[in-house]
Amino acid sequence: MVKLNKIYTRTGDDGTTGLVTGERRPKADLRVEAFGTVDETNSCIGLARLHTEGEIDDILARVQNDLFDLGADLATPPSDKPMKFEPLRIAAAQVVRVEAEIDRLNAALEPLRSFVLPGGSPAAASLHLARTVARRAERQMVALAASESVSADALRYINRVSDLLFVASRAVNDNGASDVLWVPGANR
Image 1 (cartoon, helix red, strand yellow):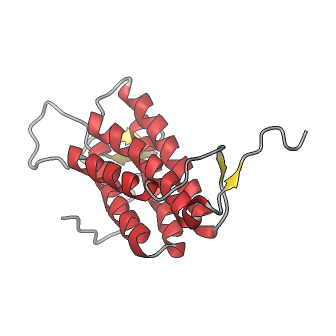
Image 2 (cartoon, one colour):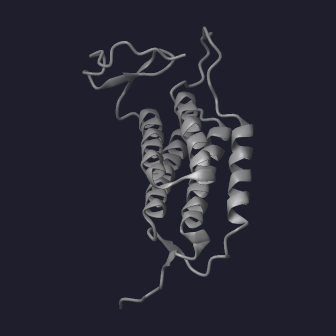
């Protein structure tokens, strides 16, 4: 369990941050950028939850907790050195759960006739913002995976989260009835 007695440590004043393994990395390091953007996604979901309730809110609460798991996964790169604990990793079951939630929410939606513009209700707009930040986290994780180890389940999870946020945005927009649809070339 995490215990934080002191919020500032001054150890990051040199522009580095510590990974779970104890290794120090520059704050602009791609791994740090990736877990930082996962944290941003979590914050955006927190804002969206100010406008949600019921099943959607319950789903988002689970995702927020999972995103801390994902951050811990990314902050603990595989190492040849023995660790004093089992690293926290995203599990395939978490991906499967999110897929089931997407399918359940999507079943009530009308098929799309166009791309959806972010908007409609405050909840939907907030969920679209969270979706775009999740997509950025995914891009950073994919870039990181090109040079360092990132688990396949972690990559699948962040991809499904952005899909879930899209479907949830439609669900809170009266199951898509209040979606704002893109009209190609409408303002030429």
